[in-house]
Amino acid sequence: MKYLSTDFYESFQCIGGECPFTCCAGNWTIPIDKETKREYDCVDGEFGQILRENILSDDDSSFRFRLTEDGRCSFLTAENLCKIYQELGPEKLCYTCQIYPRIVFQCGDILFRTLTLSCPEVSRMLLDKTEPISFCFAETPSNEDDKLSIDWDWFNTLVSCFVFSVKLIQNRNYTLSARLRALLIFTFTMQTLLEENKDIAPLLEAFSNQDYLDEQLSSLEHLSSNVPAMFSAFLYFYQKTGAPIHHFILPSSENLMEEFINSNDKEELLTGIVESFHLLLSTTYDTQYEHFCVSFLFRNYFEAYTNKKSFEEVSKLVYALLIARGYAVSLCSKGKGISTENQISLFSRISRILEHGHKNLAIIQTYFEKNGQTDISFLLALV
Image (cartoon, rainbow, N blue to C red; front, top):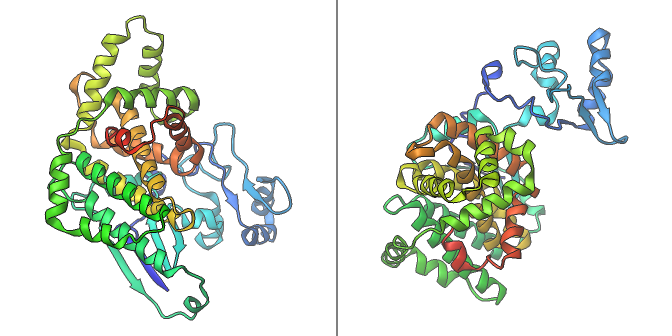
């Protein structure tokens, strides 16, 4: 078996009770796998009784931990430590609790491994990085590879396009906006060729030519971002997702948006919002948002192996970035930037609603589809 991991995958260590935003709270459903449920059924004594009393079941095959009224796992102590860990040891944690925040998925003959930004410690690790994210490749002998049914031509093409896409996003000779525009153009053309059943190799070869790519990136530097359209889309997202999500992510964003919605003089407020968007689009935050983009792409790009919709996956990246900047606007009022600490918290909370709630990302995608704004020319102006 082959393994491709982000360079920060192996270095993660849970900080336990010191975590400012524990994964054991926040009204998360914590599923319990069947094997762990059987083990919990055999735990003796008072703790065994408490354990079983705090496991809920919708049917005979799905189980989850009971949450308290304030959305905390019943086994989360006042010190934000796990009672099951304390009583039974780490090996008795359910699969979900053992693996989080690790994400492992297979595509082709590769196991892809990374960490979710919904964990604040992962977001901190990422935003503390100044160098581009790199990847670690490993291979172990396995007879299982021979049993896999893989479309090798498509898989190898997709891997090559992914590698190119990451290198493009990380090309710091140009602004992140220019890099993302080039990625959109490359992937849109790739999607067109795919739908016409044409070879993608010449496209990849052309974009891999550094002179050609530099020419493309230089020309894309001069395009302007459509900030009013970005804000309109975020406003729609805000109104459709509901107050609980916004209060959970960033109360100050909720306050700003409500003030705008209810204001009789929207022009003045809009001027400040547009200025904040421009600040977030500046090169000051390129490295932070570059890491956000690479992390998102690593996790989602290979959905295209099954659905063959590469452009849709890259479009989702544009939408996710728009949402991240939309929430950050309220922290950039009056020309002030967003601190790394606030960005860590924001990345973590946004990832919770995007990575663990795919319908939230679909809301903003639906907005653009309804308004006929999913074409390449429009998306180029959203970054």
